[in-house]
Length: 114
Length: 113
Image (tube, rainbow over all chains, first blue to last red; front, side, top):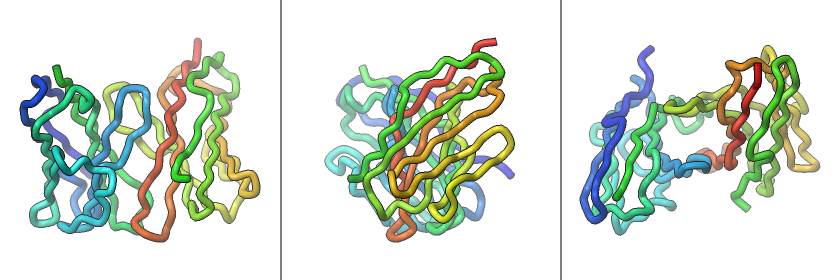
C-alpha cells in the first residue's frame, strides 16, 4: 500500500511570495488533513476535509492560507502572501473516514520563508 | 481546555533501560489517546493507542498506562534500543465531532548505546 505522497519536500521563498503544496492521500481514504508543525512543537491541524468538503478549518489563517481538495482525492494548500512565521513543516495526513482513528502522515514539506 | 501537556521535553536513556513519557489533558470529552513516533525528516507514525475503557495497553516493548480520574496517560518503552531514538508525541481526540487530533509538544528521546 503506497503511503501519503507530498511535494515538494523542501521550499525556500522570500516573504510576501506565494507557495503551494500538493498532497496525494492513500487510495480510498476519505478524510484528509493538513497540519503545520513548527520546529520543536507538535503538529497543529490547519484544515480537515471529508471527501471534497471542509469539516474543520477553524485554525486556518484564512487571510493568507487556502486549501482545496478537488474530486475528493488530491489536495493543495496555498499560502499567499507568506510571512516569516509561516516557516514550518507542512504535513498532510489521511484516514479511512472521519471515524477512522489512525491517521497516516506523509513526509511533509519543509518551508523556509526568508 | 484543548491542550495536551507533555513531559519531559527531552530524555536520555541507556540501552536496555525504561523510557517514560507523560501526558495530561483537561477535556473530558477526549476518548482516544494515540502516541506517534517521528524520525527526522519523516512524518509522524502511529505507535500505539488507547481508549479510556482500559487502563493499560501493551504492544511489544511499548505500553500505554491510562488514568482516567487523573486525566493522565503515559508511554513506557521497555528495553529501550538506540533505534527507538526519535521524537514522541502524545495526542488526544474525541469521537464526537470530527476527531480532531490535539498533539502534545513532543519528547525527544535519545537512547545511548
